[in-house]
Length: 235
Image (tube, rainbow, N blue to C red):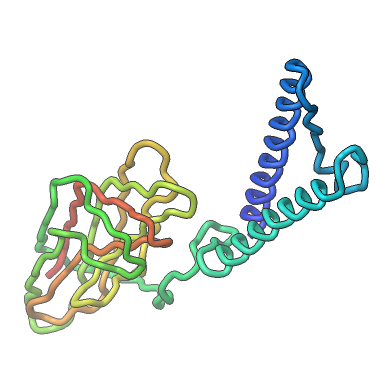
């Protein structure tokens, strides 16, 4: 929250500085050309009552405009912080409820299934989890008793723009793995970068199951995964 407020204040300050610089430049140009003078203003001066050469109507208009900018920024900050903001540790709000932590001992996974989709540009705007195209695999668990299943995932990803964030997870028959999800990448600038994560299902019954790599966008902006790979270790 503090970081978001600081960022909005910085943007407003930059906007005010740009307006002041622009009006000063216009005044210099007007004087050089001998045309009607443009009266520059300083936000601090007209808010404190100085700058009497500016007409009352113009000053009121500028104050109203600045107030509108500040109010809009404040509303945007509040909405973002409440719905899409981040905790002090950088964890996005609105994540699925966490599961109980797990600890698996002597997890025997003699079999491995592997799948890739060796293309770029896999994307979504969905804020709910959807399968990554081409990244669903059917596996068969042997034996007569439940056993563990461990999944390793890698890809390079891209989430560009303020507030952009791509989450990834794995589902088994529609159920999210543990840990529940991973913030894969956020607010990228130029190039996609490689990321990986590991998760598990501690107790999977024997038989056939569907394992899917899934992803979602925090804000609804377009986010990308490229050349994902998934290894499924099981009994």
